[in-house]
Amino acid sequence: MSSTRDIRRRIKSVKNTRQITKAMELVAASKMKKAQQVAIAGRAYALLMADMLAALAGRVDETLHPFLIKREVKTRGILLVTTDKGLCGPLNANLFKLVLDIKTPAKFVAIGRKGAQFLGRARKDMIADFTVSDRVAFSEVKPIVEFMMKLYLEGAIDTLEVIYPRFKNTLIQEPLVRPILPLSNVQDFVKLLRAGSDEASQHKDDRDMLFEPSPQAVLEALLPFYVNRFIHQLILSAKASEHSSRMVAMKTAKDNATSLLGDLTLEYNKARQAAITQEILEISAAAATSQ
Image 1: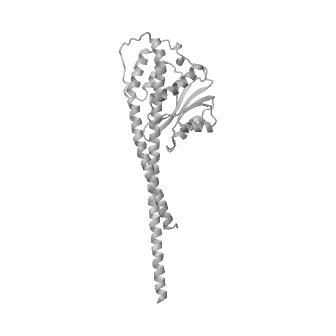
Image 2: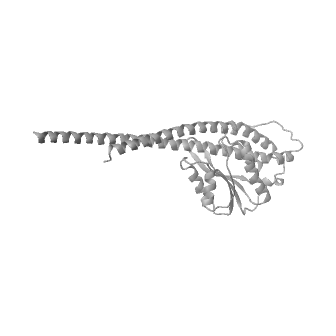
Image 3: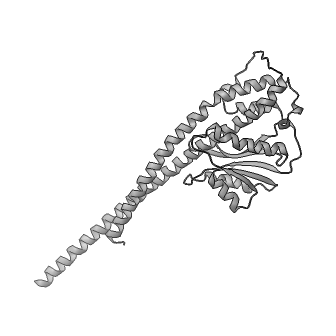
């Protein structure tokens, strides 16, 4: 059995660990709530964009826009959205499994240091890496998406796909590969924009919209912006997933520390009781010898 001094040291260490993990759990919970609020706040804007695109569908020649033209896929373009920091459970590991499952030629762009480090270790063709803040401002995401859209238009990549953790709830973050470009048609993109909204399935705009200078010109100008906005929404979901996963991981660590603290306290009490019993026996033996 360990000495009481060693057990006291372990108890102090576990208490410090529990205090740190509890603080990290509270911080992650606060960030998760803010990320969820931002993601939810953008749904109304996404629905309005879907209404505008739905009004454009049927009035334009979709074969004229490069985002709507299918071509032979020689090199996939993949945006990998991971975290900058660890301590978030299996979140990044689940995304890395999806990357390892890709056997076809692909070029990667990483968001987050963990993703960039993994792509380097796995010797994947990473052409750029970026970081975004916890706020995930649209101004941070726009250069990243425009960089990938430029590669797509130049023919360096033949698809634009996003690997990210989709936020379902606090306990479940689903790793997904979300194809973005090429779009099969405008209607499919409208469904993507409306995905995840209960009110979207019942919402229908019957207004007769007038587009100037022409529906085709409006589509040419707005479709890249809509792609930007949609990917921004995916990254917001990834941030909510990160904070949720970290909160759950820290709560589990705190609970484990509490359980271990109980075991160590019991062991300490047993060791102290054994020491006291040993002292009583020694005193009794000395007294018996002196008689």
